[in-house]
Length: 182
Image 1 (cartoon, helix red, strand yellow):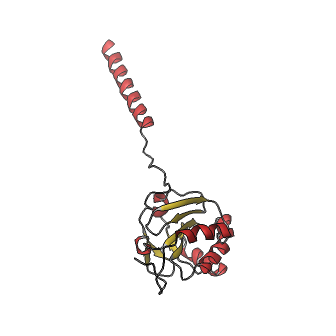
Image 2 (tube, rainbow, N blue to C red):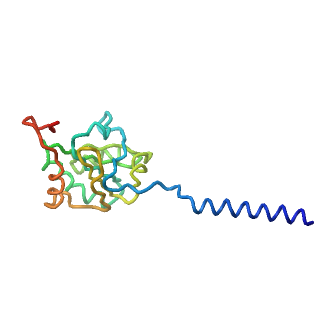
Image 3 (cartoon, rainbow, N blue to C red):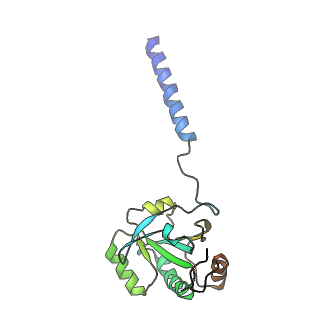
């Protein structure tokens, strides 16, 4: 009988130790914070082809995560389009990453709102998970060297003077042809 109790006690101690180790270990990656490199990605564009963050090196990027079923996402889209137009020809790119599974819903949404900036498709949430986004809309301002500058949760009036000023301070000098100088 004592042998059974001994085995039970050892088993209980081992299980308790395992539970304690699991509770104390942190499997969650550290949060995405300003100053660190933006996670690399490459996604399919709604209008065909693919786009990678690396291909935008040398440009300031506003990376926005959103969904068609998200009312605050829809509310901020007109301001995003105005920002896109206001900074046309500058070393700036506004990239919207849809987490929707239905490509047709994204295409209809884009057409209904008359959006001209690139929309990428992330139906499996691979990139949104890498950026730890789940409260849509969420946006990241990324400098021309690929580092996170700011993280925004919730909708914004992106064409407001304060956001335009913040983005303009990050823009690299351009050559006469309008591309970033090296």
